[in-house]
Figure (tube, rainbow, N blue to C red):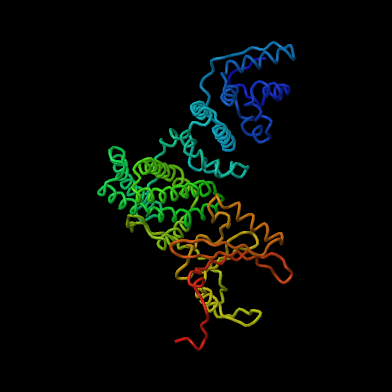
Length: 489
């Protein structure tokens, strides 16, 4: 028997089944070989050199240990051959995915970053944006909390950074939605450069408070930075829903959570600036600038390439249509790109526009139904029994922004990851019949807003969906006495 660095683990295990338990006892890293998926993918393709890398051990040590175990159990003569040529990385898509997941799991468990970079270089070497998105999505689907993936997102991007840097940036035509986002990033970098100069000056100042001149410049730059909200809304409301429709949900779950961190830190930084707290401004400002720069990197190295691969011309036309409603941050989009296909409208009204809808207490034309819903003194959104958003009322002054891209999206994906568990809890109570309503009230922008979730049931009590009603009740709360119809003028 002769074993080399190129001997495949699968062949060894088929010939010597006892080696499975031996390998698992040799190092806890090999316990993954008991996972059926790992056995069918990585285990089937991995050579001894690649297995050594997976086990974070020298290939010489692994070959020597395996040879000794075979001799001990079978009394066969085993020859060990070292010095094989360098192993090619895994090319099988599923095997690569399993190795990537394994690297990130180890990263989250505290394994040294340089060790994992070495393993990545030996087993994968090159990675594309879609693979990273797929890996994050699969880890979340397998039970790793989205918050945990987000928490170490910056670190695990470092593992792949060298590979990502070799990728040529996509060629984008001015006016294409991704070109507009790219142009916004260039403008955003200029704002960050100005802010970082301010943070440096704030740190160098000897007085405890920020000077008036520096404070005014800081205030203006932070107000300009606030337009980052439009940039993120275009991603959340236009890009993410279409990616999810293609089965790609990793970026939306991870990036949206980071967006919310950036929003919260920007709001906090504005508070520090208003109070003139020099130390807090400098510390949080630098942190915020780093978070935003890291997001720019993730967008352009992961999100944009993955989106170009997944979406077709009609999808981009839909994104373009919706982004005009949200607006643009710091730039005017180009006009060179023209979609060759028009977006397909999700028309929720009956095709026969003149036919009336027969209701329990009357009949209305689809046109009148649409107008009535748009004139309600509150906003509504409708989620069906499968948790899919199927309608929202397009009222002129909606409290919470909605865009066409939300239609057909799972309601869980329309909420920040930090609150999804509450949404699921409410829906589970509705479906089980334990609750029929859930009410919340918040104060925002000088308004007192009442938010109600109502279970929708048929005449037999079967759950058919959920109705969300949001209403500005500021003026209602102030009502006193009475005002009769005859008092109207």
